[in-house]
Length: 427
Image (cartoon, rainbow, N blue to C red; front, top):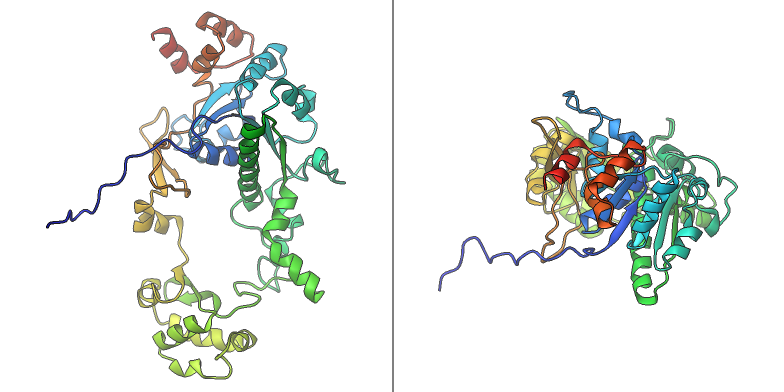
């Protein structure tokens, strides 16, 4: 009997889990677009409704400088797999068109300030009356007043505000230095992920009951949830958790250590891990040393423990450390974007994907989706849409023909790309 050296064939791809789900995306900046991007990656049809001139981040860089400044990396990264419908919602005809799409939608998602959707007469109550099974998802700095009237309800907020107020920044950084925000926008990204959980839960319920719900995530609330350790530590001890650099408030070793050519992270807090680790670094005596034999002792004597480890790591490169410890105790190098691009894990797991940069000869690498299924889903990753790229085909779905589209364009109610219009004309 012979075996295939390549292993068994992969099962054929199947429809993605959100195939058949239609979501109207009124989001902008990072939090909202990231939320709808995740749903698009799972197979939902996302119709990105933006102003006829495009949303703000379309022009945010970086770009290759080849004249495509209205389509930068920021927009590329969080608007993939979407269809573009620029629509003037302040015009009655624009609102009428939007409401026709509401009739066939499973959800509307927006991240405007409180009162914006009311000013457009497109708020939750209006849309729910029009389509009772519609789910309405929103991200706001301090939540929607319908789920709890915050004293800050009308305050604008960005990621950095949520990080600061939610307690994350106070514990991030070093004791003798100022608080430090995260290098990535977790004050946007974590609320986005939470909103998706809520929206999908509500869609599931709506399909069973015929009744949609409003789903609200406050960025401030989300960051309190993310920094959950702050709450119980303060409640039990009465103390305010502070900044501890790259250490852990409870465990040791658990942190960052210097190598000859950079930094590595090592974590061996349990006795099982510590026994293996101490032997690997040539210090088996530490297994029975009263200063390091138990988890509590290791944390109480963290400077002693870290000094021993640091003496070992400083004589080795990152690669040497990982080669000696990898697979035996938790270890990982601190990697740059260039390191990540060269990592075989990233290639195998397709965590960087290339998409075209329209109008240039370039391609752009963007982060892939970390949510995987087996059998694999058939959805791929398409570049973010050009402004108005899908206007003609989308409006055709609700009975608006090419001639009428041209009139809407002339009136400033919708926008199209020349390519999309030309393709429709010659179809």
